[in-house]
Length: 634
Image (tube, rainbow, N blue to C red):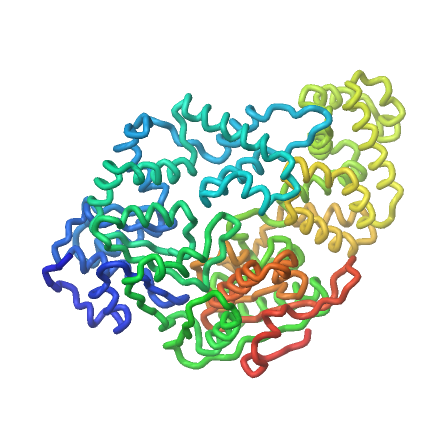
């Protein structure tokens, strides 16, 4: 499509040569490989402005982002630059755009335009009803895990059988059951005029496959611009492919080195295969980095260069030289927490704002010891996208066992334990509380247990609970008490959370923390303080951010601490036998490093409590030449 050239904005002044070329010459099939911190958002914003200033109708432009916030920010910048709102321009997430189109054209697929969109909780509730109560001799995974299986199947366009066999092989014996549940789930949604998030994509894809309506929608969008293309899954890839069939004008912007969401169904193949799918595609590079110092970028470049599946590129910093990244060797997780917290105190005293400091980790459990240290030093912090360590349900469950041992009258803790006990429902729990009101202590409660009128299963499991509590009472070692609790609670995690490995890792860390306390009361007091502490400090107005790398994507900090980069923790042990998984782990490491603007401390420890091996630094650190970093011992 030819454009009438009209330049109201001074593009040459506002953009570097690479960005300018993309904005002006980005016709046809275009792949923009945008390195971290290279100004990809700027390119998309100015590309939209260029199209509008050169006569393209706003209603024929589609801007697809991965968050509604990103779409709003981009449109707001377009409005600021052009001086008027681009009324009619389509911008939003895949789900947002899919919803709009299905409201207009869904009747072709017998979808009523007044359907209701289910959130995740609603979807799981419906699945819970469908699954019902499994027979005594059968164990089904929780509805949340079934929903995850169905969602992955929808987003990857793989069969349920394929998803279960490759990602959840221990449930392979239930494939036919999952398929039946899926059929009933789809049937029930259609009957009640409901759509879940996955349906918005799946039915949009089906809409585009309809020859008449699909062509009409494709004709509508003369220019398609896609942000974060490396995060797309198979159904999103197919949607974009069909959308661009008429005008053949699609610009996708992404970075293969930042593709880290395969657990959600995203695949790096989409961006890697773009030149093959579109042999006439123009490939543009944005490799000027405006975020990080040359020293940080050299370190990151050397690491990601070890990936085989990648577009070769070398990010170049436009910033002045800074200091080298620092690798800090610690003895234990507790020493690591002490180093990071003490260094944060020093930085704050030197004038660095806490909000300019980010602490990153591969897995959630790795922040526990650091949270305790930050609370002790009254340094306010936030956990991005999640709860603090001691606020998590499974941690509170385990601690509840100890709370009732220390304080028999702790009704809140008893409620948690009764909720965990199979055979004791809410009504039975209320009866138990009424009964306990007339009992003086734990011993008397145990002595009179047989006078309670409970069902057989409830009585059996309550007695098991009381036996565990009795043993904990006579233990001096808190961490051994956790081992005892896990003999039964591990089964609850399996049933409730589908055996989530992160939760088991959390409890291992709790056990490590418990080992530091000689008395049960001290441990309970400290954990309670941790749960309720917010590190209030009247002299600090902003907060340090703690985040997994996945939650930190797209963010940046002046100073970053990247903790727990030890062998057997990062890369995740499950990735060591799978080259593709290992390469994604390296991309996660790369994303973490490139969040830092001026300074980065990468820490690892050599000793894990309760493990038979001695840790060493991650293979990702061993791959980087020594001259690119400093090494400290703490």
